[in-house]
Length: 416
Length: 109
Image 1: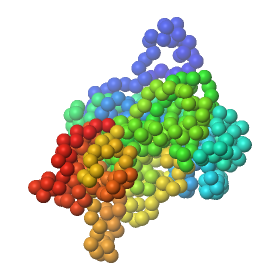
Image 2 (image 1 turned 90 degrees about the vertical axis):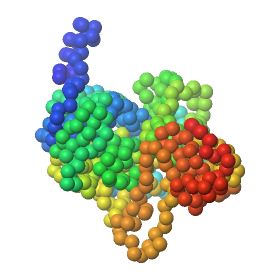
Image 3 (image 1 turned 135 degrees about the vertical axis):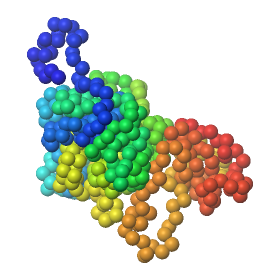
Image 4 (image 1 turned 135 degrees about the horizontal axis):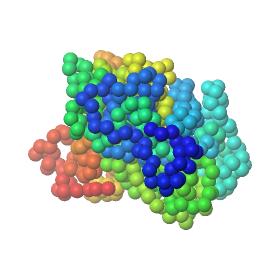
């Protein structure tokens, strides 16, 4: 793998950029690996990368049934933030945000991390109290956070409507300046390229159809490209986690739902931050291409269909136009859905399982993108050491039995 | 968008309904006798099939009554609508209680 630099850019310019080498190898699956990761999204690829980088485990395969980052990694609204209320969540998401801050250099791949600020709006007195409490809690955890008054919100984000004559007037907001966005595909591709360079085999179009067990231990995976023996298996299958875990007769506290998002036609720069509102429920940012990237909540019903109902889109566009009346004449370009694995406490599961050698990283629900590097980092530790890191120890599968839930439903700044 | 056949009001748009999750969850008969693992199962573990799912819906903006729906989670096709309390597996009694067209409601979003 050649290093990407100004020199390589100039060198390739002489050949009209027609001879760039492929970013990652495309090997056929070997008969056996030390670790097999099921799922070639951002979290799975990050896990493989940190297994190789931090733990020296390079005999690793990432199996992806489609193409890399074609699931939720390519379907999210690319928001980065770490403003979670509870200590456990704050530590985990902050670790991830810190990894994002150095990710382009670490991977030698431009992940286009843009710390443009994430604004979470308040709309009433209760929101104000909750928000100020959150600012204080975040600061106690060493995470940057500020309270903005209504006028300061307008100053920070001039396109927003702070008129009191609307149904849900803006009364202020919290701001995490280190939050922002990243290029979601680049995160997947960057991890894939860096992992591949360290010896990880990335195998696309390879669907796992079964988990082979001997005496309560997982010993390998059946795939559409044949049986692959595995010392350890990590499941990072997002919306399909229940399906894969079911292959080992493991039941998970997950429900899969569609989460819809959409983009507008591209326009000139109008919004230079991320705006989220929990009360009216929409979040929006503007991509470097100029499209407004808009998201909100899940469809209520269980689904694996990667599409949702139209009224859910209506309910995110309504709030968007209340916050930004100037967007009312924009046309929408595309809309889509990803299948998110929601957990009862809205926190992820990054854990060993009752099945030996089987590890699971799931339950990220609607908020996994921001956690991609951190999730991979702690999951790699869990797989390599056979025990969780201090950061993910609270996010174990047995918390549903012990009752030690990390209830971010009420605590998250917005429905992730 | 789903077109859901309420057993009492007929076919109505999804926006009139609220979703109630997996059907046929039975409250424990003797709660104090349950172990932590059994409580975890009752409270948190849910069927999450990629395929046919039996689930509850309530006609929140209509007759406000609950009922069960059998729906495919990939096609969103509604295969069967049946009253609360009816057995999960269809039998003659359930088929009679069903609205006549319910089984033909091939509904896709």
